[in-house]
Image (cartoon, rainbow, N blue to C red; front, side, top):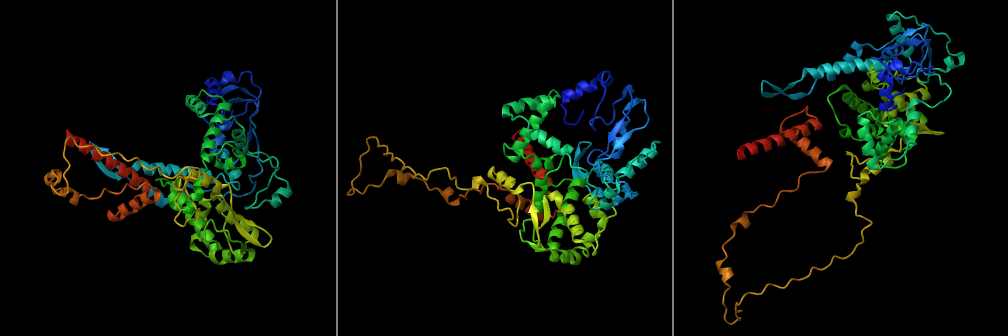
Length: 518
């Protein structure tokens, strides 16, 4: 039983797990069964697969202890080859991560609170508690790093009274080749993410009506695994705005990652939808660091296509990066980019080590430094420029103060499919004849009575032109946000908070108007 099995499959299996397993010889399951399930049928032996890209060591120990009646008390685990067997017990601790994120944890945005029927603006203590939980989750994620995964699992297992032994260490060749930058590489096989991306890309196409119907049943847990994959495919087809999905690109967007949002945030930080949590604050910190890294290495921005000589990049790294105070906070860098906790950059690094360290910071933003014979250059991955262009064509424009993306919305262009036909002349309507009214001759010089009796119209002289239409483009909305903050002397209001505040004021204005009408 695995994560993208259908809700109906999970329901049938877990409704009475012991009845399900009565006639089963081998039962395979992923973290979809992690806690809260008691398997009381007799089990001969439990095996496990270790992976740093799955759940944490604590949750893994919960998984393997679902079976209550196991004949063989020894559990055998298979290492995936990326997890290193060493003597590194330098784990991340809660106090360390809390200290690195202290500013974000202690500073929470004010909220509207209603107490005893009175509305006031104050900080919500629940936000501080929520952020402290995020710190704990961050510690677990950081300790899943391949350099400490096995030893951290060993410590937790020993604390539960379980003995932990390594039966077969890696061969000398693998151990000699393994470094902090490049772990031992096993034989290439399709990963879980690659398998899921391939299954989605090869699923059946759905019509919008079929998608709505299956999505409705999916919410109730009444779909099959194939239908779940079909729903996922339809969703990603809409996201990528194409009927043909590339599983090599799709795999980088699964499981909560979004290379597109990371990249456009690097282009302009306003594209990041800021929230009051650790993840959002850390993302803004990563954007600042990656921008600084590119500039220190000699590239102006993420779209700089200039090639750089190899010796020039190494010189820039030694002179501009190693000595920069921003990059001397190595522990903070290691936490943000999920690197080995003890890793430090220095002047004696080889060109390959420099390249691998820089790319470890750039990879989340779909950027990599590539090398040819004599130069280095920036490579944009995941076909993002084509995706951004497709987004532009449906009217989605990203913030881009330096015009690095050269965006043009299709609805802002002249439609090339409309013929330039001349406008048709309007048909002249003859004036309505007057009823039995004699037409004066010029000799009579008789004034028109309508002109004599027509009163003056001072309101036309005082009439003011209609106000311009309300701003609709993202740039105009953001300019209004900046002007509002400046006029009201507000420094710590995010763009999202400003939008929520404006919506609140509009609702209150409508409410006051309705009271006046009453």
